[in-house]
Image 1: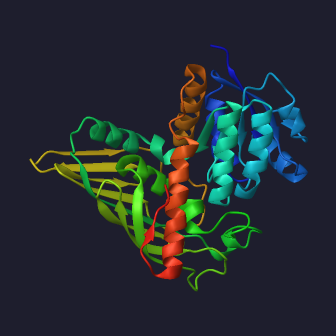
Image 2 (image 1 turned 30 degrees about the vertical axis):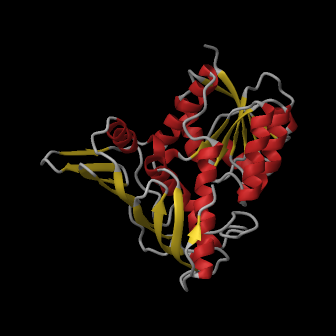
Length: 342
């Protein structure tokens, strides 16, 4: 197969793990151009990575040899950029979240569908060795149905993180801990247990941060399959702890904790796996993690285009997470049980 020819749009903080992954995938993918409108960011990026740069987005859009684009810009820019890329018939790998609002996220998905281009979303937690192993065990029926499923996202971000213009705001990011950090773990959780039906709980901004969005959420959740659980998410949990999902199943209990999976069956058997492909990023440095799960996600995106199938993480998958986040915020503000949209 010929190499996939890729353009990169956006060279900010999120570009680092993608660039490291793309270097290792040089036999499958060719970086044709990397774009930022900001000259400082182009210079800083070029000092670390030897990719061709451009200072006009049209250089990517007008190049008919480019098959796909990797979009790494702030959430509130995604719809407009995706509209341009879809019109140019480029397949799109989009950094999470889909957009700053669910309405714009839905429109974005519709544009890709009507244009006939593939849309993959960067939610790399599904691609860790631990998550893949657990998915294999679930798919084989070895754990039985899920009865309880709870997620804990206890991260730490200092105030300097939120002093960055736009960070943690509704207009640019779409909110705080849920849509910016928690979306990874919530997507992974839903990939196992399925959509949520209703939630209740609290969502606040603690005195530890001056920000518009929420930095602490505590909620209960009922899923459409009848299972129940809790969701706890924060960026005020110093010094930061591994994200965790716990499953209570008919035949066993299982836990995903950071880059580890632990399974304990009722018959006394057990299994544990710890890998090095998803460690860090829970504390003051949000980028202190391995790029290996990004690499696996990009490989899946390449294969999806070659095989003309959907990527593993689709826009519709992520829309379900957006609906859950919307319900959590609404429940936190009203104090009422809130139905999760479908």
